[in-house]
Structure formats: structure tokens, C-alpha cells
Image (cartoon, rainbow, N blue to C red; front, side):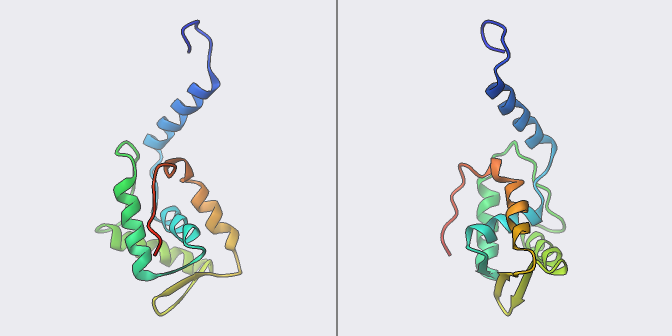
Length: 125
């Protein structure tokens, strides 16, 4: 509410997004997809890991992040495993590339965390 007791949609939206961010954790697949999208749908495994870890360091402390296993290395492996199982990415040695089968899924998953990424800067691999 503003000083006159009126509901301000922009303030309400910001508050709701903050509360959603605290209640709904960011998972590995959307983080991996965000990095893939930013890299133009092709990246090496090493660069993906580096960019993923950079994202983790820059995400606001109030945002919940849920990583399976023993940290970022396992989270990237799990995210890639799930995307490979769905035919969304292919691996050729160290190269990871989005397939032509479901390229829109990368954008879909990445968009689910976009609100947390506005102040985050990724280094170009």
C-alpha cells in the first residue's frame, strides 16, 4: 500500500516475486539452461561448470538454491544428465550443444529463473 492506503501493483508484484523467490528454490536444470542460453546453445563442459559456479556466487542470498549431492560439480552433472535423457542436449567429448529436437525447452527453463538474473553478469567463455 502507498501512503494513501492504495494498493500499488508494482509494489505488490515485487513483494510477491520476493516471497516466491524465498519459497521456490532454483534447481540445477534451469541454471544449466540459463548458461546454455547465454552461451548461444553451445559450450564446453569446463566453461559450463565455471559459468554455473559464477552464477551461484552472484545469486542473492535470500534466493533459495537446491543443489543435489555434494555441490556444484554434481549439480551440473545432474542437470546435464536430465537434459540428455530428454534429448535436449548432446555431448561430443567436452562439447555440449542444444539439439534441434527441443531447443525451446532451454529458453523455457532459463526463463523460470530470469527474475533472479537481472544483476548477474556472466563472463564470455
